[in-house]
Image (cartoon, rainbow, N blue to C red; front, side, top):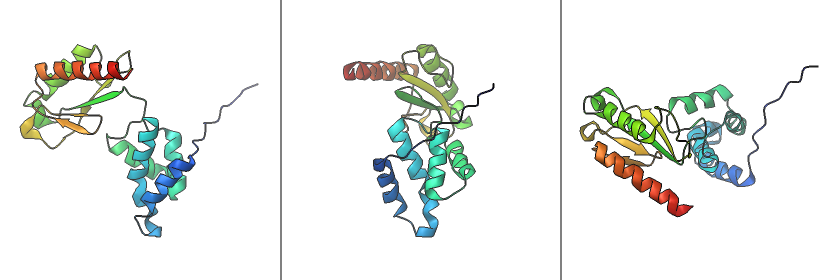
Length: 174
């Protein structure tokens, strides 16, 4: 006897649905899908990442094909498709930044944390990812912390200070 498992359906809570409603209301009724990025952001804020099941729920809510939601999620690096560390560190490694030590900064950060690019530390605090252009080439190496805070001129010393500060912050929250 073979058993097949069915994927778990993601159920939008009333609170999430209310947040989606507020975003959709910003657009004409026939353009509800314009709120897709806002809805993805809401799910990520609530779950910490955007699961495939939540993408399906967003597609159903907005009345659009699921593939259209997947395209948005996979195109933008601000949407996490898996659970990441408490601190997501994106280091720009686009060519202009590479010419100004962007790759060196990425390698230093990974070495300090003992992980490979794209990995998460065993304690779940840090995920380090390579990023495409962050639009601050003259300030490189640049990075983005948790998709919110841009940091410039990230030397090895500044990266070490950042990691120590974030660790201390996490410890004080525990």
